[in-house]
Image (cartoon, rainbow, N blue to C red; front, side, top):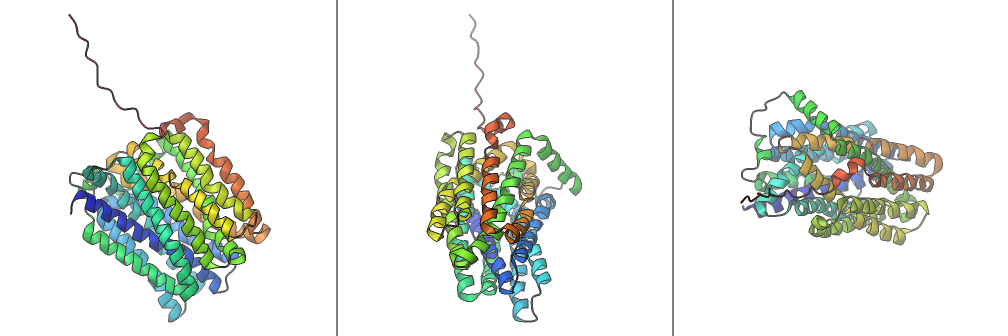
Length: 419
């Protein structure tokens, strides 16, 4: 296979793997509700699904560099598929108590971030070999994640509504198995890719020293400190919305799992289109102001509509607008990360950045469950939209946020002619 074919195969693996994750986020809350669980139980399940990502990121990145990037992608999908398949098997045989569901959800998410970090490390080398600009390749990679939401959310909603959450989890396990097979057969590092080659070389430092080196890099870089803080807060609020508040709002106001799938799928489809379109203009627009405007729009409309108690048509329109804006966010951050992170430590730094960004997500779903029980779903949405808007304006303050802008091209030295 040539470089372009391998790049497309990598994107296909990302789509299929992330589709499995999206179906899981739709199916698990309704599996909890089908057991007679409360809003608090849904929040606890969301906590169990997201906290392993925070643990797997920092510890899995250095491990990925030793195991190899393709093998890590395959292994992460196999573990996710096996643990999710165990849920319906237990439910249909000996029974699935709540603690067992939480344990399986925890294990299924433990290797998600290392697997995605492995695929992300392979991306720049394959893009370079295929002659694709970095920002466009990152845009396509992020678009593949958005496409998985477009496919997975409606599919998950339809499966849950038609066959039940356990049948939906069986389909999720099949998706993870397919992703593992595609990666094992079709994905290979680009020839001469120094970042991918580090996985096959003997490590020069110990495992814990590699983790410490990556941690020091993240802490000392002024831009990444700000990024982690910003994305930690916004991801916490996004988790409150997507893992707890939206399922509850869909069950109470929109009509159930199928409506939730359509709302989430609309957001994902619009974000997919936004990522693809932005990939072709990303190298022509200023990064920081574009990032701020799109970040505000990515949260505001889709949070304001449920805060006002509006119905499904309004939710679909707001999700489309927010999704289009959100499509530019990860391509911008992804390009900056690949520009600033040394090639030999990308996997561990991606894991640490991902863990830092995801650190608030388990708490977001849990707090949203308590808040919905206490003050109601609409009031909680109102508080979230105010916080989200204020936080996403932070890059306008300047300082180290200016490092987000594209590096100026190096100029060749001018030779002075003497006579």
